Length: 134
Image (cartoon, rainbow, N blue to C red):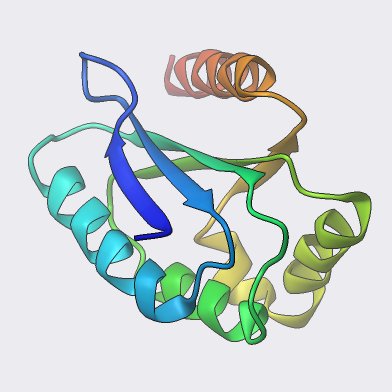
């Protein structure tokens, strides 16, 4: 399978997707369903690392699938950080913000070059959530 999903940390605060090779949406959907089940086991925000470092491309229909995932949003959904996307694919993500603003509001995301950078972005987002809550 070219799309795997698992807990990134022992505290179950980050879910990691690993995309490898020429993955398909048919492979992604069960992983997405599994991440929903994983979020059901906790009562706090869960962030995501979307590891695209070993995936050469994103299949056609990405805007539609991203909207579908955003609209099926889970109450525990936190920040999703996409790791390893090219500049062109990052611009594609920004297009999602403009084309589907209501869906995008339910699905916060960012981009990183490395897993370590993604972890830092998640730490920063959590610190901001803590400041906003106080």
